[in-house]
Length: 96
Ligand SMILES: N[C@@H](CCC(=O)N[C@@H](CS)C(=O)NCC(=O)O)C(=O)O
Image (cartoon, rainbow, N blue to C red):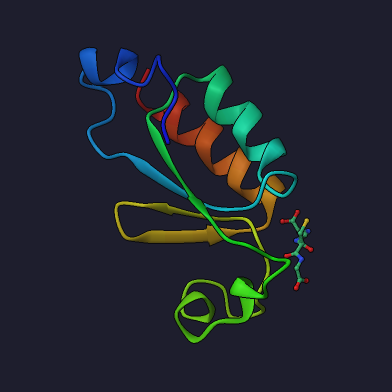
C-alpha cells in the first residue's frame, strides 16, 4: 500500500528508497501522519498483532521486543514511534 502522492519526492531526487513501515492500523498512525505530511514514498507491511505476528521469529529480527511500529529505511531499522518521526523529520531536513 502506498500513498497516491508517493512520487513527489522521487521527482525531486530527494529520496530514492521506499520506506517500509511495519505495523497495524492504530500502531502506525503517529508515524503515518509524519510520512504523509512530508509526502514520503512508503510501503505499509501489515503486522497482525491480534494474531501475534509481532512475536514471530522473523519479526523479532526487526524488533527484538515484539512491538510495532518499525520503520526500515534502506536496511536501517528504527523503532519507537516518536523516534521514527524524529528520524524522518531529520532525514527530510537534511535533504532540503
Ligand atoms: N512506545 C512504543 C509503543 C509500542 C507498542 O507498545 N506497540 C503496541 C501497539 S500500539 C504493540 O506492539 N502491541 C503488541 C504487543 O505488545 O505484543 C511506540 O510508540 O512505538
